[in-house]
Amino acid sequence: MDKKTVRDVDVSGRRVIVRCDFNVPIDDQGNITDQTRISASLPTIRYLRDKGAKVILMSHLGRPKGEVNNKYSLRRVAKRLGELMGTDILMADDVAGDDAREKASKLKQGQVLLLENVRFHKEETENRPDFAKSLASMADIYVNDAFGAAHRAHASTTGIASYLPAVAGFLIEKELKALGQALVNPKRPFTAALGGAKVSGKIGVISSLLGKVDNLLIGGGMAFTFFRAKGLDVGKSLLEEEHIETAARALDEAQRKGTDIVLPEDIVAAAAFDNDARRLLVDADGIPPDYMGLDIGEKTIGVFRDIILKSATIVWNGPMGAFEMPNFAKGTRDIAHAMAMCSGTTIVGGGDSAAAVMQMGYADKMTHVSTGGGASLEFLEGKELPGIAALMNK
Ligand code: ADP
Ligand code: MG
Image (cartoon, rainbow, N blue to C red; front, side, top):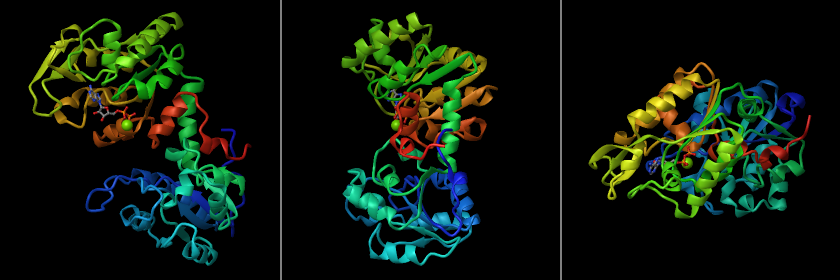
Protein backbone atom coordinates (compact mmCIF):
# COMPACT_ATOMS: atom_id res chain seq x y z
CA MET A 1 0.00 0.00 0.00
CA ASP A 2 1.32 3.44 -0.86
CA LYS A 3 -0.53 5.24 1.96
CA LYS A 4 0.84 5.87 5.43
CA THR A 5 -0.76 3.90 8.24
CA VAL A 6 -0.97 4.27 12.01
CA ARG A 7 2.39 2.48 12.17
CA ASP A 8 4.05 5.39 10.38
CA VAL A 9 3.18 8.06 12.98
CA ASP A 10 4.07 8.54 16.63
CA VAL A 11 0.76 8.54 18.49
CA SER A 12 1.97 8.36 22.08
CA GLY A 13 0.31 11.06 24.17
CA ARG A 14 -1.30 12.55 21.07
CA ARG A 15 -5.02 13.03 20.49
CA VAL A 16 -5.93 10.79 17.58
CA ILE A 17 -9.31 11.16 15.88
CA VAL A 18 -10.41 7.99 14.09
CA ARG A 19 -13.18 7.78 11.51
CA CYS A 20 -14.76 4.37 12.00
CA ASP A 21 -17.61 2.71 10.18
CA PHE A 22 -20.04 1.95 13.00
CA ASN A 23 -22.99 2.00 10.62
CA VAL A 24 -24.47 -1.20 12.02
CA PRO A 25 -27.97 -2.57 11.40
CA ILE A 26 -30.38 -1.76 14.23
CA ASP A 27 -33.82 -3.31 14.76
CA ASP A 28 -37.06 -1.58 15.81
CA GLN A 29 -36.22 -2.01 19.50
CA GLY A 30 -32.88 -0.30 18.97
CA ASN A 31 -30.78 -3.47 19.27
CA ILE A 32 -27.65 -3.93 17.19
CA THR A 33 -28.35 -6.99 15.02
CA ASP A 34 -24.89 -7.40 13.50
CA GLN A 35 -21.73 -6.14 15.18
CA THR A 36 -19.29 -7.12 12.42
CA ARG A 37 -18.36 -3.52 11.70
CA ILE A 38 -17.70 -2.76 15.37
CA SER A 39 -15.48 -5.83 15.72
CA ALA A 40 -13.65 -4.91 12.52
CA SER A 41 -12.57 -1.59 14.04
CA LEU A 42 -11.03 -3.12 17.18
CA PRO A 43 -7.46 -3.75 15.93
CA THR A 44 -6.87 -0.04 15.23
CA ILE A 45 -8.47 1.15 18.45
CA ARG A 46 -6.54 -1.40 20.53
CA TYR A 47 -3.27 -0.47 18.84
CA LEU A 48 -3.78 3.23 19.52
CA ARG A 49 -4.63 2.60 23.20
CA ASP A 50 -1.62 0.34 23.62
CA LYS A 51 0.60 3.03 22.15
CA GLY A 52 -0.68 5.56 24.68
CA ALA A 53 -2.82 7.67 22.37
CA LYS A 54 -5.88 9.64 23.48
CA VAL A 55 -8.47 8.17 21.18
CA ILE A 56 -11.45 10.04 19.72
CA LEU A 57 -13.80 8.01 17.55
CA MET A 58 -16.39 9.25 15.07
CA SER A 59 -18.83 7.57 12.71
CA HIS A 60 -22.15 7.90 11.01
CA LEU A 61 -25.13 5.66 11.70
CA GLY A 62 -28.08 5.47 9.33
CA ARG A 63 -29.41 8.52 7.56
CA PRO A 64 -30.50 11.16 10.09
CA LYS A 65 -30.43 13.72 7.26
CA GLY A 66 -28.50 16.42 9.06
CA GLU A 67 -30.67 16.55 12.17
CA VAL A 68 -30.17 15.37 15.73
CA ASN A 69 -32.28 12.23 16.06
CA ASN A 70 -32.03 9.93 19.05
CA LYS A 71 -32.97 6.96 16.90
CA TYR A 72 -29.55 7.27 15.26
CA SER A 73 -27.53 8.00 18.41
CA LEU A 74 -24.21 6.19 18.67
CA ARG A 75 -24.72 5.58 22.42
CA ARG A 76 -25.67 1.96 21.83
CA VAL A 77 -22.49 1.52 19.79
CA ALA A 78 -20.41 2.99 22.63
CA LYS A 79 -21.94 0.43 24.96
CA ARG A 80 -21.29 -2.51 22.63
CA LEU A 81 -17.78 -1.33 21.86
CA GLY A 82 -17.08 -1.06 25.58
CA GLU A 83 -18.28 -4.63 26.11
CA LEU A 84 -16.10 -5.90 23.26
CA MET A 85 -13.03 -4.06 24.51
CA GLY A 86 -13.62 -4.65 28.19
CA THR A 87 -13.26 -0.96 29.00
CA ASP A 88 -15.52 2.05 29.39
CA ILE A 89 -16.02 4.16 26.31
CA LEU A 90 -16.78 7.82 27.01
CA MET A 91 -19.70 9.20 25.01
CA ALA A 92 -20.04 12.81 23.88
CA ASP A 93 -23.47 14.44 23.80
CA ASP A 94 -22.66 16.16 20.53
CA VAL A 95 -20.36 15.88 17.53
CA ALA A 96 -18.06 18.87 17.72
CA GLY A 97 -19.90 21.02 20.24
CA ASP A 98 -19.06 22.08 23.81
CA ASP A 99 -19.48 18.63 25.31
CA ALA A 100 -17.33 16.86 22.71
CA ARG A 101 -14.60 19.53 23.03
CA GLU A 102 -14.61 19.45 26.79
CA LYS A 103 -14.38 15.64 26.92
CA ALA A 104 -11.78 15.48 24.18
CA SER A 105 -9.55 17.98 25.94
CA LYS A 106 -9.67 16.02 29.20
CA LEU A 107 -8.83 12.62 27.69
CA LYS A 108 -6.04 10.68 29.34
CA GLN A 109 -3.70 8.35 27.51
CA GLY A 110 -5.46 5.11 26.58
CA GLN A 111 -8.94 6.56 27.06
CA VAL A 112 -11.50 6.36 24.28
CA LEU A 113 -14.20 8.92 23.50
CA LEU A 114 -16.94 8.41 20.92
CA LEU A 115 -18.48 11.50 19.33
CA GLU A 116 -22.14 11.58 18.36
CA ASN A 117 -23.29 10.67 14.84
CA VAL A 118 -21.45 12.93 12.39
CA ARG A 119 -24.53 12.95 10.15
CA PHE A 120 -26.44 14.91 12.79
CA HIS A 121 -24.93 17.84 10.86
CA LYS A 122 -25.66 18.34 7.18
CA GLU A 123 -22.18 19.85 6.87
CA GLU A 124 -20.84 16.28 7.10
CA THR A 125 -22.24 15.00 3.81
CA GLU A 126 -21.81 18.45 2.24
CA ASN A 127 -18.13 18.15 3.17
CA ARG A 128 -18.04 21.69 4.54
CA PRO A 129 -14.53 22.90 5.41
CA ASP A 130 -15.62 24.70 8.59
CA PHE A 131 -17.14 21.49 9.94
CA ALA A 132 -14.11 19.42 8.97
CA LYS A 133 -11.91 22.02 10.64
CA SER A 134 -13.85 21.90 13.89
CA LEU A 135 -13.58 18.11 13.97
CA ALA A 136 -9.87 18.40 13.28
CA SER A 137 -9.35 20.99 16.02
CA MET A 138 -10.04 18.36 18.71
CA ALA A 139 -7.08 16.21 17.66
CA ASP A 140 -3.44 16.07 16.49
CA ILE A 141 -3.64 13.15 14.07
CA TYR A 142 -6.40 11.80 11.83
CA VAL A 143 -6.87 8.10 11.13
CA ASN A 144 -9.35 6.86 8.57
CA ASP A 145 -10.47 3.31 9.23
CA ALA A 146 -13.96 3.53 7.74
CA PHE A 147 -13.55 1.46 4.61
CA GLY A 148 -17.34 1.27 4.23
CA ALA A 149 -17.48 5.08 3.88
CA ALA A 150 -14.25 5.56 1.90
CA HIS A 151 -16.12 6.04 -1.39
CA ARG A 152 -17.80 9.15 0.01
CA ALA A 153 -16.13 12.55 0.07
CA HIS A 154 -17.52 13.78 3.38
CA ALA A 155 -16.10 16.07 6.08
CA SER A 156 -15.12 13.17 8.37
CA THR A 157 -13.72 10.98 5.59
CA THR A 158 -11.97 13.46 3.33
CA GLY A 159 -12.32 17.10 4.43
CA ILE A 160 -10.64 16.60 7.80
CA ALA A 161 -7.50 15.23 6.10
CA SER A 162 -6.70 18.78 4.95
CA TYR A 163 -6.14 19.91 8.53
CA LEU A 164 -4.27 17.03 10.19
CA PRO A 165 -1.61 14.46 9.34
CA ALA A 166 -3.83 11.74 7.86
CA VAL A 167 -3.12 8.00 7.87
CA ALA A 168 -4.97 4.71 7.32
CA GLY A 169 -6.08 2.34 10.04
CA PHE A 170 -5.64 -1.44 9.96
CA LEU A 171 -9.08 -2.19 8.53
CA ILE A 172 -8.52 0.03 5.51
CA GLU A 173 -5.07 -1.45 5.11
CA LYS A 174 -6.48 -4.99 5.21
CA GLU A 175 -9.31 -4.21 2.77
CA LEU A 176 -6.99 -2.57 0.26
CA LYS A 177 -4.52 -5.40 0.48
CA ALA A 178 -7.11 -8.10 -0.05
CA LEU A 179 -9.04 -6.36 -2.82
CA GLY A 180 -5.89 -5.01 -4.44
CA GLN A 181 -4.11 -8.36 -4.51
CA ALA A 182 -7.05 -9.93 -6.28
CA LEU A 183 -7.12 -7.27 -8.94
CA VAL A 184 -3.55 -6.24 -9.50
CA ASN A 185 -1.89 -9.57 -10.07
CA PRO A 186 -4.55 -12.27 -9.84
CA LYS A 187 -3.69 -15.93 -10.01
CA ARG A 188 -5.59 -17.52 -12.89
CA PRO A 189 -8.10 -18.72 -13.70
CA PHE A 190 -9.63 -15.52 -12.37
CA THR A 191 -13.41 -15.62 -12.00
CA ALA A 192 -15.92 -12.97 -11.02
CA ALA A 193 -19.45 -13.87 -9.95
CA LEU A 194 -21.92 -11.01 -10.19
CA GLY A 195 -25.51 -10.98 -9.07
CA GLY A 196 -27.86 -8.73 -7.19
CA ALA A 197 -30.82 -6.76 -8.28
CA LYS A 198 -29.77 -4.60 -11.17
CA VAL A 199 -27.44 -4.24 -14.11
CA SER A 200 -27.59 -0.47 -13.69
CA GLY A 201 -25.82 -0.54 -10.32
CA LYS A 202 -23.03 -2.71 -11.68
CA ILE A 203 -22.35 -1.49 -15.20
CA GLY A 204 -19.08 0.01 -14.06
CA VAL A 205 -17.85 -3.17 -12.46
CA ILE A 206 -18.99 -5.33 -15.38
CA SER A 207 -17.11 -3.28 -17.92
CA SER A 208 -13.98 -2.95 -15.80
CA LEU A 209 -13.85 -6.74 -15.34
CA LEU A 210 -14.18 -7.56 -19.04
CA GLY A 211 -10.81 -8.63 -20.35
CA LYS A 212 -9.45 -8.90 -16.79
CA VAL A 213 -11.31 -12.00 -15.65
CA ASP A 214 -11.35 -15.34 -17.42
CA ASN A 215 -14.93 -16.09 -16.38
CA LEU A 216 -17.78 -13.78 -15.51
CA LEU A 217 -20.67 -15.67 -13.92
CA ILE A 218 -23.90 -13.72 -13.97
CA GLY A 219 -26.82 -14.55 -11.71
CA GLY A 220 -29.42 -12.65 -9.69
CA GLY A 221 -31.90 -10.20 -11.10
CA MET A 222 -29.38 -8.72 -13.51
CA ALA A 223 -29.24 -11.98 -15.49
CA PHE A 224 -32.63 -11.25 -17.07
CA THR A 225 -31.50 -8.10 -18.80
CA PHE A 226 -28.75 -10.26 -20.32
CA PHE A 227 -31.37 -12.86 -21.27
CA ARG A 228 -33.33 -10.16 -23.14
CA ALA A 229 -30.14 -9.09 -24.88
CA LYS A 230 -29.95 -12.63 -26.21
CA GLY A 231 -33.58 -12.50 -27.31
CA LEU A 232 -35.02 -14.70 -24.54
CA ASP A 233 -38.38 -14.03 -22.91
CA VAL A 234 -38.12 -13.28 -19.20
CA GLY A 235 -41.79 -13.13 -18.16
CA LYS A 236 -42.25 -10.89 -15.14
CA SER A 237 -38.59 -11.13 -14.07
CA LEU A 238 -36.66 -8.04 -13.09
CA LEU A 239 -35.76 -6.30 -16.33
CA GLU A 240 -34.12 -3.00 -17.15
CA GLU A 241 -35.27 -2.22 -20.66
CA GLU A 242 -32.91 0.73 -20.93
CA HIS A 243 -29.93 -1.53 -20.27
CA ILE A 244 -30.63 -4.36 -22.71
CA GLU A 245 -28.31 -2.58 -25.07
CA THR A 246 -25.63 -2.28 -22.35
CA ALA A 247 -25.88 -6.01 -21.72
CA ALA A 248 -25.63 -6.76 -25.44
CA ARG A 249 -22.51 -4.62 -25.69
CA ALA A 250 -20.96 -6.37 -22.70
CA LEU A 251 -21.58 -9.77 -24.29
CA ASP A 252 -19.96 -8.54 -27.45
CA GLU A 253 -16.99 -6.93 -25.75
CA ALA A 254 -16.43 -10.00 -23.57
CA GLN A 255 -16.00 -12.14 -26.64
CA ARG A 256 -13.45 -9.76 -28.12
CA LYS A 257 -11.54 -9.39 -24.86
CA GLY A 258 -11.40 -13.07 -23.99
CA THR A 259 -13.76 -13.13 -21.01
CA ASP A 260 -16.25 -15.98 -20.89
CA ILE A 261 -19.60 -14.59 -19.73
CA VAL A 262 -21.58 -17.48 -18.26
CA LEU A 263 -25.33 -16.95 -17.96
CA PRO A 264 -27.74 -19.23 -16.08
CA GLU A 265 -28.98 -22.29 -17.99
CA ASP A 266 -31.96 -22.78 -15.75
CA ILE A 267 -33.98 -20.66 -13.37
CA VAL A 268 -36.26 -21.07 -10.38
CA ALA A 269 -39.29 -19.06 -11.44
CA ALA A 270 -42.17 -18.04 -9.19
CA ALA A 271 -45.72 -16.84 -9.72
CA ALA A 272 -45.13 -13.89 -7.37
CA PHE A 273 -42.40 -12.17 -5.35
CA ASP A 274 -43.34 -14.22 -2.33
CA ASN A 275 -41.61 -17.03 -0.47
CA ASP A 276 -44.74 -19.17 -0.67
CA ALA A 277 -45.53 -18.48 -4.31
CA ARG A 278 -45.83 -21.43 -6.70
CA ARG A 279 -42.37 -22.36 -8.02
CA LEU A 280 -41.14 -23.88 -11.27
CA LEU A 281 -37.68 -24.99 -12.34
CA VAL A 282 -37.39 -23.96 -15.98
CA ASP A 283 -34.74 -23.71 -18.68
CA ALA A 284 -33.48 -20.23 -19.45
CA ASP A 285 -35.61 -20.12 -22.60
CA GLY A 286 -38.72 -21.43 -20.84
CA ILE A 287 -39.78 -18.77 -18.35
CA PRO A 288 -43.59 -18.60 -18.56
CA PRO A 289 -45.01 -15.12 -19.29
CA ASP A 290 -46.62 -14.72 -15.86
CA TYR A 291 -43.62 -16.02 -13.86
CA MET A 292 -40.54 -14.25 -12.54
CA GLY A 293 -37.07 -15.68 -12.09
CA LEU A 294 -36.01 -15.49 -8.44
CA ASP A 295 -33.05 -17.86 -8.25
CA ILE A 296 -30.60 -19.79 -10.41
CA GLY A 297 -31.47 -23.45 -11.02
CA GLU A 298 -29.66 -26.73 -10.28
CA LYS A 299 -27.88 -27.05 -13.63
CA THR A 300 -26.59 -23.50 -13.31
CA ILE A 301 -25.41 -24.12 -9.76
CA GLY A 302 -23.44 -27.11 -11.08
CA VAL A 303 -21.84 -25.10 -13.89
CA PHE A 304 -20.97 -22.18 -11.59
CA ARG A 305 -19.65 -24.55 -8.92
CA ASP A 306 -17.31 -26.32 -11.36
CA ILE A 307 -15.87 -23.03 -12.58
CA ILE A 308 -15.47 -21.71 -9.03
CA LEU A 309 -13.70 -24.87 -7.82
CA LYS A 310 -11.24 -24.63 -10.70
CA SER A 311 -10.51 -20.93 -10.16
CA ALA A 312 -7.44 -19.58 -8.40
CA THR A 313 -9.02 -16.21 -7.68
CA ILE A 314 -12.73 -15.44 -7.28
CA VAL A 315 -14.45 -12.18 -6.57
CA TRP A 316 -18.15 -12.31 -5.76
CA ASN A 317 -20.51 -9.36 -5.67
CA GLY A 318 -24.29 -9.64 -5.47
CA PRO A 319 -26.53 -12.56 -4.44
CA MET A 320 -27.58 -15.15 -7.04
CA GLY A 321 -31.26 -14.86 -6.15
CA ALA A 322 -33.79 -13.24 -3.85
CA PHE A 323 -32.02 -14.97 -0.95
CA GLU A 324 -33.95 -13.12 1.76
CA MET A 325 -36.75 -15.59 0.99
CA PRO A 326 -35.64 -19.11 2.06
CA ASN A 327 -37.23 -20.73 -0.99
CA PHE A 328 -35.01 -18.66 -3.28
CA ALA A 329 -31.80 -18.79 -1.26
CA LYS A 330 -30.36 -22.05 -2.56
CA GLY A 331 -28.40 -20.56 -5.46
CA THR A 332 -26.74 -18.01 -3.20
CA ARG A 333 -26.04 -20.60 -0.49
CA ASP A 334 -24.57 -23.13 -2.90
CA ILE A 335 -22.35 -20.54 -4.56
CA ALA A 336 -21.16 -19.41 -1.11
CA HIS A 337 -20.48 -23.06 -0.29
CA ALA A 338 -18.53 -23.60 -3.53
CA MET A 339 -16.41 -20.55 -2.74
CA ALA A 340 -15.84 -21.85 0.78
CA MET A 341 -14.61 -25.15 -0.70
CA CYS A 342 -12.36 -23.48 -3.27
CA SER A 343 -8.66 -23.57 -2.45
CA GLY A 344 -7.97 -20.31 -4.29
CA THR A 345 -8.27 -16.72 -3.11
CA THR A 346 -11.94 -15.96 -2.41
CA ILE A 347 -13.23 -12.44 -1.96
CA VAL A 348 -16.76 -11.32 -1.21
CA GLY A 349 -17.65 -7.65 -1.67
CA GLY A 350 -21.07 -6.08 -1.64
CA GLY A 351 -23.40 -5.31 1.24
CA ASP A 352 -26.03 -7.95 0.59
CA SER A 353 -23.68 -10.68 -0.60
CA ALA A 354 -21.44 -10.17 2.44
CA ALA A 355 -24.52 -10.32 4.68
CA ALA A 356 -25.65 -13.52 2.93
CA VAL A 357 -22.25 -15.18 3.40
CA MET A 358 -22.18 -14.15 7.04
CA GLN A 359 -25.74 -15.30 7.68
CA MET A 360 -25.07 -18.65 6.00
CA GLY A 361 -21.99 -19.23 8.13
CA TYR A 362 -19.35 -19.20 5.39
CA ALA A 363 -17.57 -15.94 6.26
CA ASP A 364 -14.68 -17.70 8.04
CA LYS A 365 -14.06 -19.87 4.99
CA MET A 366 -13.39 -16.93 2.66
CA THR A 367 -10.05 -15.23 2.15
CA HIS A 368 -11.75 -11.89 2.65
CA VAL A 369 -15.27 -10.59 3.21
CA SER A 370 -15.32 -6.86 2.66
CA THR A 371 -17.01 -4.64 5.25
CA GLY A 372 -17.78 -2.05 2.59
CA GLY A 373 -20.48 -2.71 0.02
CA GLY A 374 -20.38 0.44 -2.10
CA ALA A 375 -16.70 1.03 -1.43
CA SER A 376 -15.64 -2.45 -2.52
CA LEU A 377 -17.76 -2.15 -5.66
CA GLU A 378 -16.15 1.18 -6.57
CA PHE A 379 -12.73 -0.29 -5.83
CA LEU A 380 -13.45 -3.22 -8.17
CA GLU A 381 -14.55 -0.70 -10.77
CA GLY A 382 -11.09 0.79 -10.56
CA LYS A 383 -12.31 4.10 -9.16
CA GLU A 384 -10.22 6.11 -6.75
CA LEU A 385 -11.84 6.19 -3.30
CA PRO A 386 -11.77 9.79 -1.98
CA GLY A 387 -11.35 8.69 1.64
CA ILE A 388 -8.17 6.84 0.67
CA ALA A 389 -6.86 9.40 -1.79
CA ALA A 390 -6.91 12.04 0.98
CA LEU A 391 -4.41 10.13 3.14
CA MET A 392 -0.66 10.85 3.19
CA ASN A 393 1.51 8.93 0.75
CA LYS A 394 4.37 6.81 2.05
P1 ADP B 1 -24.89 -6.32 -3.11
O1 ADP B 1 -25.37 -5.47 -1.96
O2 ADP B 1 -24.27 -7.61 -2.63
O3 ADP B 1 -24.01 -5.55 -4.03
P2 ADP B 1 -27.29 -5.81 -4.60
O4 ADP B 1 -27.63 -4.71 -3.65
O5 ADP B 1 -26.91 -5.45 -5.97
O6 ADP B 1 -26.18 -6.76 -3.95
O7 ADP B 1 -28.55 -6.78 -4.75
C1 ADP B 1 -29.10 -7.47 -3.66
C2 ADP B 1 -30.58 -7.71 -3.87
O8 ADP B 1 -30.81 -8.34 -5.12
C3 ADP B 1 -31.14 -8.62 -2.83
O9 ADP B 1 -32.06 -7.89 -2.04
C4 ADP B 1 -31.84 -9.72 -3.61
O10 ADP B 1 -33.10 -10.07 -3.10
C5 ADP B 1 -31.99 -9.09 -4.98
N1 ADP B 1 -32.13 -10.10 -6.04
C6 ADP B 1 -31.25 -11.05 -6.38
N2 ADP B 1 -31.73 -11.83 -7.38
C7 ADP B 1 -32.95 -11.34 -7.68
C8 ADP B 1 -33.95 -11.71 -8.63
N3 ADP B 1 -33.78 -12.73 -9.45
N4 ADP B 1 -35.09 -10.96 -8.67
C9 ADP B 1 -35.25 -9.94 -7.82
N5 ADP B 1 -34.36 -9.54 -6.91
C10 ADP B 1 -33.21 -10.25 -6.84
MG1 MG C 1 -26.98 -4.00 -1.80
